[in-house]
Structures are given as structure tokens and as C-alpha cells.
Amino acid sequence: MATTPYFVLSPSAVLSIIGLLRGPDKIDPNPAEDWHEAVVDVVIPALNEQANVVLALESVRRQTKQPRNIILVDDGSKDRTIEYARAFADHHGMPLTVIKRDHPIGKTPTIKRQSREYDADVEFILDADTYLDADDYIARTVEELYKGAGIASACGVILPTREKDRRRRIDEPAIHAFLEAHDEVDLHQPQGGWWHRVNRNLTALYRQQLYTFLQRFVYVGQMEFFGSITNPVGCAVAYRRKYIKDLFDKYEPVLGDDLTNSEDIFIGFALMNEGYRNVQLQDVTAHSLEPEMRNLPRQIYMWSSSFLQSCYYFDGLLGSPFKLLRRLRHRYREKHDPAMKELVARRQIREAYRQPFGVAHTQREGRPAGWIPFLAAFEKIAFPTALLVMIILQLWEPLIVTLIAEMAIAVGILTAISKGRRVKAFIQGILMTPIRYASLLYDLVTIGRFATDLWITGNRKWRK
Image (cartoon, rainbow, N blue to C red; front, side, top):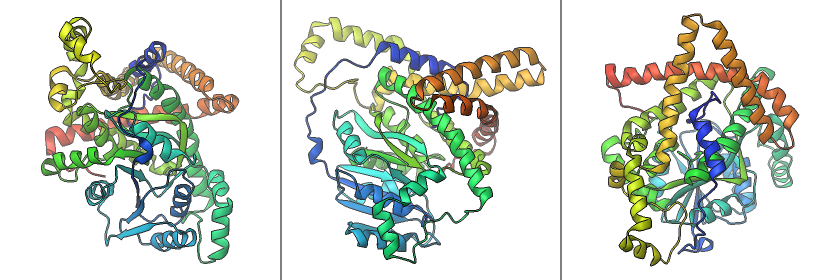
């Protein structure tokens, strides 16, 4: 969610509107591989998730496409995460493998090691605090992966988990029966007091509006235009395992495990840099637990800093808009050069949004989807800076007019895309606007820390 345009009147929003008006690539793909035959391993990274891991496992148990292995990687938990997971897996006969670490080393090494130690076609990452709503979530993401060799990752729409969502899942028959058979299992949140519940619900309320706008509008336009978003939402995502293994083999000798402050953002950039696509589906959803409101600034920093760090590492991708003329010349040759036309006509495998692979091509011609991070980087730096300047110069009238107009458009779009809950979306959109503007201004802190790392301390130990 690092490319979130907190300010709706933005180039990114305009880009998405153009994508929606333009429509998707008209090519009807005929994949060379059958997705039904794909072998899937589910990897569940966990750290102190005894209250959530059972919900994650139950959502895997219900999937129409079952994984070959379910690998729980416990990153040094101090609670009963492993005990609860094993009890639930034994209760339902699930093929659970547990990897226990003595101390936390992070999610990045987990993804890397499982991509090397297992030989599945698809490595499906499911955070332990996330559960899949759709019973065909894995099937749909794998099916999408196999629509073309150029698709490296696929995820669904991610929604914030509210307290009532958790209660509803816990009351479902499979979990209810498990709890009755295991009196020792307690799925209540460790911090379950009213103040913590209010904090979590406030975050969920804000994120509900943010995620709806981003995933039901901005990402939809990006998918129509480029067939890709910048990076997958890493809490419930299917990767082509070989692509991920190759990625780590390439970057580990240079960066180790320091793949920025949020690994899914770096991975998304790296895959795009190779010419692959990161796909989001609109017809399957998952719920993920959000931090309490008091911890929101830290998560905003992690996402935004990882985005800026990835822009730094993949500057060739970021410079794609400046290579537009080269891409247009290449496209002209494909349409008018007889030799190129013959080559295209002889292709037996059709793939939408097809493009050459390799970093060399990115450096030479850029990528069409490079417009997404380029515009997002511009917004992330320019918008909070502009607001700060207006405040310092006390330009109150233009500032207020701008904010009112922006809020009206933002709430209008949010209301229009919130089918079935438009009145709620309208009210909540207005109430959550101050938090959105505060998040935008907080990006100034991120920019300052990033600039300090680059030009003062030289720190590159960027890692979640």
C-alpha cells in the first residue's frame, strides 16, 4: 500500500482514470501451462500469533485447491503459536510442517529459504494474522499466475479485520468444534481491553476507506492500463517460486537480507524491473489484522520508506517515463516492420501485456508500468512539502479551498465505489479525512529519515 495517493487530486488518480477509460489489453491469452497441475506450498510466517494462527489455518483448510505442504515458520514466538497450530492441524488432519527459530530474523529470510528448500511451482505466502475469505482464493491466484509467463505474483483484495470479523470467524463450525475439543486454546487478543479494541477499530475504520479507494479504484485503473500494480499485498500472495528464488539469488550477494523495510515492496519492484507483472484480482478477498492507531505512524514509515528505498535501488525502472520515445519506436516497428510483424504472427502462445524480460531492456527502454512508481514518488515528496510550505507561509485561504475540494472529490469517489454501503462510506470518508491528511504530512518524517540515510549516515541496513 506504499503507493497510496493520500491526496486524491493526484497524477496517480488521473493515471487510473485514463486506464479505466482506455480498457484492458484485448489479447485473449492461451497459456502454455495448465494451472490445475501447479504444485502449491503455503508458507505462514508467524511471530506471537496464538490468537490468529488458527484462523489462518482454517482458511487454508477450506481452499478448493489444497497445498502440498503447509509450512509454519515461527520466528521466535514467546506465546503458544506453535502449540495451537499443531493442535488445529492434528484435529483436522492437515499436512503442517513447523520450523521453529530461537530468535526473530524477519520475514524476508523466510520467503527466501522456503523458495530454495522446497520445489513447489507456487510459493503462497499467508501471514499468520491474515485469513482468506474466499474458498477459491488460492485457486484464483494460481490460475491468474498461469495466464502468462510474465505474471510473477497474484493477490486478492485485502481488507482490515474488525473485532466483529474475528468473532464471526471464531464462531464458524470448524473453529467452534476445535475450541470445544481443546479447552486450553484461547483465541482472544492478548491486549483485549476496551482501549486497545477502540484503537484497533479506529485503525480498521480508517484503513477500510483507504484500502477501498486504493484497491477498488486506483489499482483497478493500473491493472487496466498496465496489467500490473507496483507490488503485491504481501500478507496473502501467490508467487512463482522460481522467480522468487532467482530474485534472492541475484540480490542476496549484494544486499543480504536487507531488502528495504518492507520485503513485498522490494520484491514487487525487482519483479517489475525484470519485466514481470504483479497482478491483483478483484473477485477474491482476505482479511488482515491492522496495528492499533498508536502504532500507525510506524507502519506508515515502514511502507513509505520501503517505497523510497526501492525507488533508489531501481532507478532505471523509475526513469521509465523518460524513455517513452524509445518504447514508441519499438512499438511502431512491431506494427510496421515486415520482419517484426512476421515474428509476432508466428507466436503460438498469446499473452496480454507482453513485454521483453530482463534488466537490460528496463535500462534501455523502461517499462510501461514504470509510470506508477514515478508518479507515486513525485506525490510522496511534492504533496506533503507543498502543504507544509502553505502552512509556513500562512496561505490559509488557498489551503482551505484546496483541502475542501480534495475532500469532496475523495469522498465522492469513495461513495461511488462502495456498493452496498454508500451511506456509511460517505460518513466515514468525512470522519477519516483528518487522519489521511496527518498521514500525508507524516511522510515528511519519512523523507527526512531517508535523506539522512542517503547523504549523511550512509545507512543501508534497510530491513523489516
